[in-house]
Image (tube, rainbow, N blue to C red; front, top):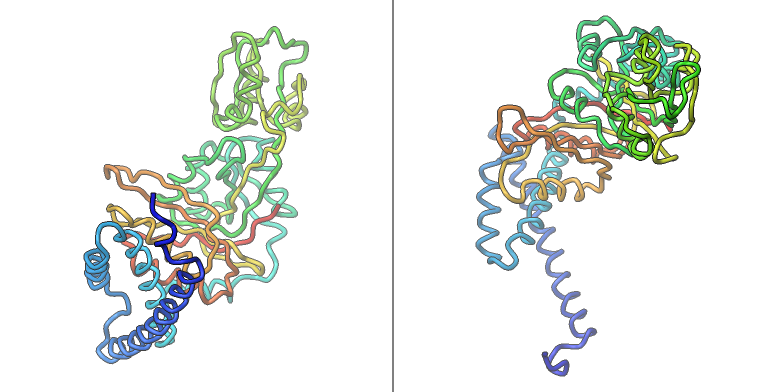
Length: 387
């Protein structure tokens, strides 16, 4: 154990840090001044602000200078500095990225009011939770039902419906991974989101008792949300189906009185079933987040959440450097989800939800930089989320 008398006092160490900080700030400002000169030179010779090869070489040099013990910390620091430098150069040159122009055009061409009437695609059948979400988002939606989530995306692509409603995550069971996979395959934009309270019921044919039940049908997410309740049922088979309302329809159509469906209470009236038990989800505070998608970007007043997809280089530190870049812009990261890229071993697409008003210059700069520096980048939209 070190002799504390040989260690500088707290006041002495803080005084040393203050002296070092003054010098660091002075050198940072000097570096940014030189960065402005670099930006002006690039403008004159027609070179882009982002120089990925130069940044890789610089970070490698920083690693060597810092040494093994401080290498990662130094790289994280300089990743932030490089991000700030790029943003400063864009600001200095007053450049506008293609994505920024796209966003500004979307804002200019979007009505100030969200539509009251619209054609809307939902997965499932009458009584589905997606229908409830559509009715919350629109005053008078003209709903068409589709068999699969993929069919909903295709309906938007083909122009069969203007909007589509899709569940993307649940507060109990987590993300709907199928939706995330489809998001990378289809071109679309999120224009609004909604958090919907989900209360599941056990629905049966009239006269069926709890002890009669031998099979429970529902969507996999609903089954996960009610896993504890299902475990208390004696010797039942669990059967995932495409939709909670579809489960109710199947129970209605079967001759087997031992089948039950997990769905919302409205499905009982729609399909002539009895509510055996209500609120059977394991967590009473059970919410599902739905997104509303369209073929073209629409950005309504109050939009403060942005979703993007991108890839990062398959090497240590790539994701942490990206997170440092977001942090440097003082933008709140509310969700980060990774999904494997089909056909690419150990490579992933990353889905980000960023919380920041669309009017923020920092957000537009960040999106422009990510678009130019990422091998694969998709802007999924900027929207408001209803509670």
